[in-house]
Length: 120
Image 1 (cartoon, one colour):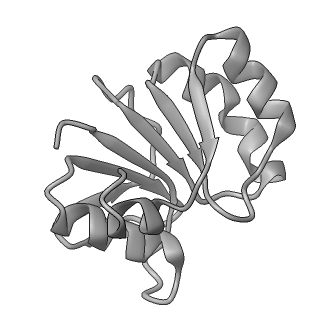
Image 2 (cartoon, rainbow, N blue to C red):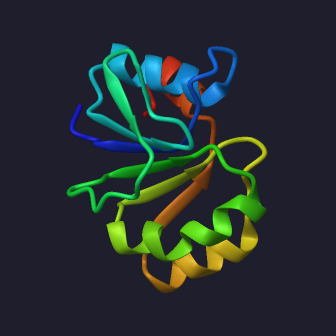
Image 3 (cartoon, helix red, strand yellow):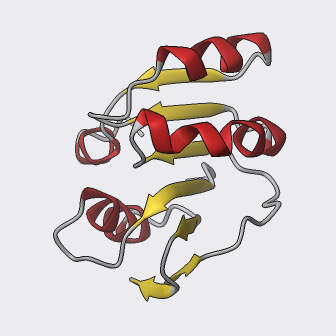
């Protein structure tokens, strides 16, 4: 797959959905980068704690609640992803409008479901 993905809100806690998502992305050979509050590694994927200007990001998958997303609006737009996935609990109409003005596609969808049904 060529859908390089940024997991925004990555957690080292094994019971968090962002952690599961990183594991599943890696298992499906999706090139993955991750940003979180604590540096570490999941399935060979390093969690960065500083915002990096990643290149060629296809998908940003969000694991931050709408209030926590606000500080990352400009960062997400600057990455110029092809799409942003709003996992359950991350839905954010304010960010939808920003993405629309920058012609960035978005959808309310669970990364884990998309991967398990081969719709990623």
